Length: 171
Image (cartoon, rainbow, N blue to C red):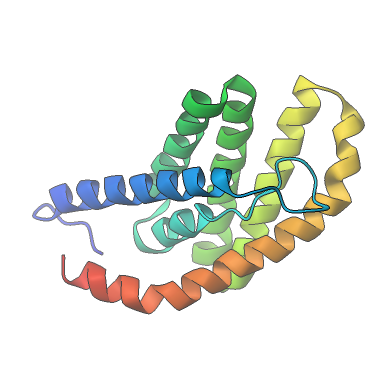
């Protein structure tokens, strides 16, 4: 989707739709039961599929707006701590996705894994500030989980990309 003066309203509307899809995926994911044996709060990161799509197709600015929207949604629905952690994780993850995907030329799976690791790292940094360094105990678990779930979300976008591109081309 190319941004032109003629299509700027469509561009903004499409960015808003993507933000709404990210919020719905985040909400649906919060309804899933915890993954057995995983650290508290560990999630698949389904809304990051939308962030990655936005980075690749809309650019860094709209993707960061979507990431910020996800963080604000966490503030409103889960409180200050979750909001801070979500915002930090989403913003850094989106920046890393953009760097790996658009600047370094990595594929979807590698970029997504890097973004997931960045997301976990930012959340751990916020958790350290808010609690104590004891949360660093989770680093090995979150590194493995982040790489695996990041690769899965990258794979999911790879599968969803052809039908998404067909839909978007009709807008």
